[in-house]
Amino acid sequence: MTRGKLRLPFLVVMLLTPPWANTDVPRPDLPTLAVIGVTAQVNDARWQDPRIGIGLRELMIDRLDGMARFNIPVPYSDIGRQSRICARQAWQAGAVDFDEFLPMFKNYGADYAAFAHVELDATPEQVLNVGGATIDEIRTSISVEITLIDLNTGMRVTTTGKGEDLSHARSAVFVFRNDTVLFQQSSVGKATAQAVNRALALLEQSLLKAWVLG
Image (cartoon, rainbow, N blue to C red):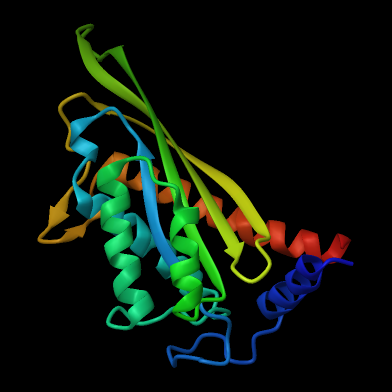
């Protein structure tokens, strides 16, 4: 049995039986997870704002932290600070090889790293309203691929979640409040958050299945 196969059951056992579930107290005895950023393949200037990439990373952190099975470093720690810098640069660059950053996060003490990639397909449509007039709509399909990697063994688990939206062509894609993206305040934002949550749900299922069958 490879070293990678030995570590996966350990991770999944924690997913099944955490003695400290539903607590906000940091647990340094848990494996440390660095959520290092999101890239996007999107040909739309409205998606270029770096706050979107930071916001998507925060969505991932909220869901992963809610599992109470990882130690996710606080923002002012070395891992937290470098993760945020990496996330901002990755979103602005659009295409980044996250593997290049993994040795740095391992040196900082991370056991696992997670990152994501977003793809967007926006198709114009014309919809008839009740009066018979046409309305310009945009059908947006969003795909989010999330990867979790063991920094000690190199073992990876990757899952994909999808979300879809149909909204007026002039509707706001994302709504912001200062530096925060309010994903639930726009239909595209809701679809994006849905894709992230679906990918993370599948990630957890994949880990559990691998443990049961392995």
